[in-house]
Image 1 (cartoon, rainbow, N blue to C red):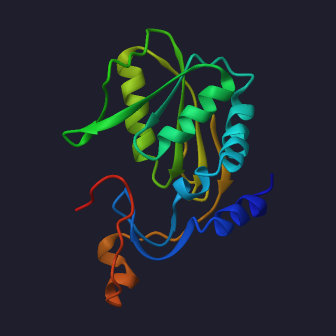
Image 2 (tube, helix red, strand yellow):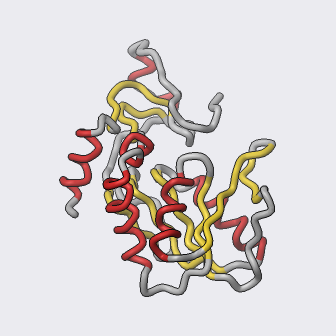
Length: 190
């Protein structure tokens, strides 16, 4: 599937939002990728997550882990297609943690999956969890890399790479124009 075809799916499902958004990273942007609106359709979920699974199929993967909330569906479907365990890290007291009895065994090869990568902050937090637990990072997969390829991880794969404008809050022209801000991400932003 081409980048244009993937972008077309986002537009058809009204998952590419235009406006003034505060991202989970805290950055501001005129565009927001609401992957949940795409992934609610099993045919799109299967194809997009299948692209990630196929990229890592020849890599030894024991576990797929995702940051909650947005990455859970991606990780679950990638893990299903690779026939491996899946789990997620969730926020407690402001940081991502393994909960619900999830464990990564020493030496396990772990694939980190998420829906959208902007700065790589959530994936980096999950990578630190994996390392702390004694696992080895096999790679990082995402549906959308909105950094335009600036975010770097070992064995990083994105189904779609776009360079989407982002601004620090203090430099945001949308704020300067007085446009109302929307905070659609799962993490409460300040």
